[in-house]
Image (cartoon, rainbow, N blue to C red; front, side, top):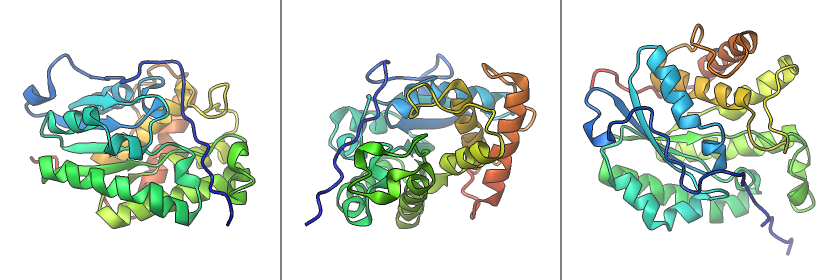
Length: 269
């Protein structure tokens, strides 16, 4: 029997449970705002994706209040077993709960994904809708590592390259979206487009895994476009050089337009 690909780690220096509120109010008091909870790991808290997303949404006319629970290296299995994750889900009537799998695990082979990724994702989706039946589950499709996944290359040859790893990640998130009816936020696809067409924009931190500020900005643009149907073109550049921000806004807009299904929230609620 072939050994399973077990090595996974998304860790970076940062808070263990990184809360990222765009406003000082509680999600329970967020009248008129869209409440979004991010559950993931350092791919959420590095550069504070939740707050970046909320700032861009606000600049485009959509009020969002965000919170996050994102311990370094956490997987969906760990979130599904976590009392703190359950507490966060039950803390407010969320409009959207974002689920992010540990970045290597979503690229494992189909059998291991079926055993270790899909069951906790389904369990979390059920818990989300038990608390808030009208909530949308959004799956944060992550990006491949800059040089592929060397630690699992022998067990899963497809992840030896960045393109091969991204294909597996994309397949896994598409499967999760189909199984749950959730929204897939195609951040990984937007990264691939940027890396191919604008290699001058550095999306990776020095470790080749975590996002640079540009990478987080791109992710936030994709989230705004996918969840709210608002083009990020013309949004403020925040911490990113303006010319690079314009590139990333266009890529996010084009990527989401190309994605199938609307998946957008009802702004009339």
